[in-house]
Length: 332
Ligand code: FAD
Ligand code: NAP
Image (cartoon, rainbow, N blue to C red; front, side, top):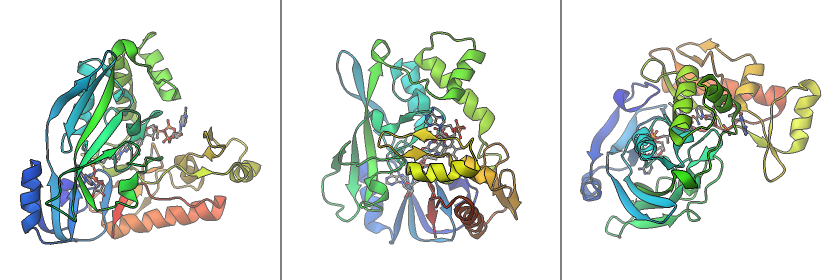
């Protein structure tokens, strides 16, 4: 599985197949030994052991118009399309909605699984519906999930909970805004600072995408050089009383108000306060520029990654009384 996971974990799959169409997918599944694991770009999965049964790489491609109105254009996109290719397609056609999500690795079909998000924008903001094959009933017609059906939350959806492992997403439909009808989101400080550095005063959709690409390229490790899965943990969303307890010892603790009255505390800050930033444990470590990203310094095993993740979770819990939750899918 080495070429198929961005953490660079060298595990074996018992069987492996690649599906390019929905029919192909059904055909493969009718013969493939179970259990089945549907894989996209492997950028949000940590293989802590060999994989029994069959890994099926989803390579269903295609970006097709699927309706329009005066201010929006709908696109139906194959689940195996590379996410950033879709973003580039939208930016090139002056379609707004996905520009803050530029350069996120992985495929379109995996994006709804954790409702990918960055710089104040989430997938759910542009998503219309998800089409999926029911893995328990290969003869049934493809099922359509509306945005409400997907029960999106912060880096969360029905596909990570009740429907975990039950469906293979085959396509996702988006509603993108035509440029004159689009409200850009520049709420994150890094975007504002980068646009200022780029001397852009009235940003376009393409400017936001360029700014995000510039920030991400300077701040995040390139998986081709240093294996990683992006943010390893979710940012904890806690009651205000928890923040007040943290502030009693750390008055400068960063935090962001949530609509429901709770607050989000950046997990990267909590991990950094516990002394993990840039630290190494065997072949794995916390990235020197962003403590929330765990990296493979070469030859790491899944056990090493999980041991580091647990050590970090334990020290954050001991120091702040906050239980971190992995954002990545750990295959154990
Ligand atoms: P995979 O890792 O292949 O799969 C992830 C999970 O989804 C697995 O459980 C898999 O079984 C399941 N799955 C995949 N495809 C399908 C399908 N078609 N149907 C059903 N199940 C499926 N995430 C963010 O939200 N925001 C970010 O800003 C961000 N930045 C990142 C930066 C870096 C450098 C890296 C390495 C990762 C980052 N991520 C980010 C995480 C990751 O890129 C996203 O979660 C992405 O959507 C994963 O896509 P993938 O195709 O690689 O999924
Ligand atoms: P950052 O800008 O240094 O900010 C640290 C954290 O504070 C972020 O996680 C973000 O939460 C939160 N934050 C910052 N400004 C905010 C604002 N104006 N309003 C609300 N919350 C705010 O973070 P970063 O590490 O460089 O990442 C930048 C963005 O890319 C973030 O949105 C992050 O989620 C995303 N990203 C995600 C991954 C991943 O694998 N999931 C990897 C890299 C980057 P949120 O995370 O909730 O936005």
